[in-house]
Length: 391
Image (cartoon, rainbow, N blue to C red; front, side):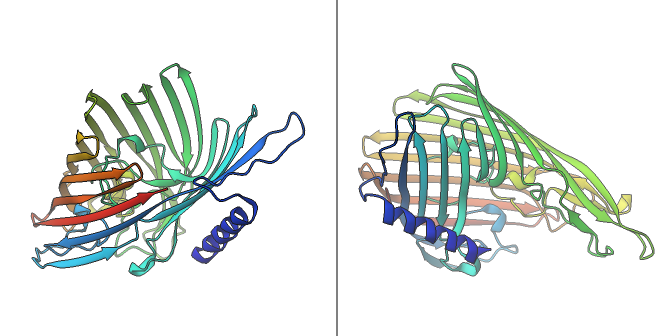
């Protein structure tokens, strides 16, 4: 799959270079018969270098995630140099017509097993109000992402990429409604260790709805997700497999306000059951549903609560800082495996300097702590120095 993605990307970039004029934005405008439209091709991206110093052992090296802190506590200093956050994207847009059609594809360099091999990030088509492909889940808020350097956002945010079919439409001058059907393989579950080859089933897509009200700068969003979780199970080898489906759900409130022209406050909170894989930290960590031994190991959804507060302040036209705090808590059900994380929190602060419009550099620190259901805990601290050029 990775080789296929890389080959498609290479062909698309080759087509762009061979048919387009190279400038700050590569564009293609051909003369069309009257009544037909033009096409614009463009390339955009990011080149970022990071130097990270950890003071405790963490499983994730290229982004700070409290869930990846190693338990038991292991205080050890290590460093990591990375360019993996660098990205390149190629898009095409149809202009000057009633029906707007566009396509976009993007990669970064978070390859498997710690390599810098290209990794597929986004790839989608847009036609008027419709979107089809992989991009940020509709149950996310891309606008709330602060001016920070770490690849991983504050741990409590709903922030994941999904394959989806999305429909977005304005309801009034300041309001937009978006509905989506997303990858039915989204749910991430824990199966019983002694089961007779119980297996996850891909059956029904996840449904999301997101409502946005406000201006371009200040807004509030309310979102909901319904996530069917299906699996095949049986209790004896003589039985046939039975398909079972339970429903995960989640609610989200998110918003941003410019208190002054220099100070921006953002807040997001979410809660529900069986939707944990939409969390940036718990994505694919099998926290959506776990077996209940008191009910013959039938899967039950887990509760999850998140809250994130972010403040961004510009000290001067070229100097800014971000400070944030994030807290997440999994439910208290007695059947949850003791080694699973019960709660985690994340604090971060940075100072960024932007000497040119497309260049920024700075220093950032992240602190995180997690606690398991068997009352074991560990914390970690990281310092990161970064330089980024966008184009």
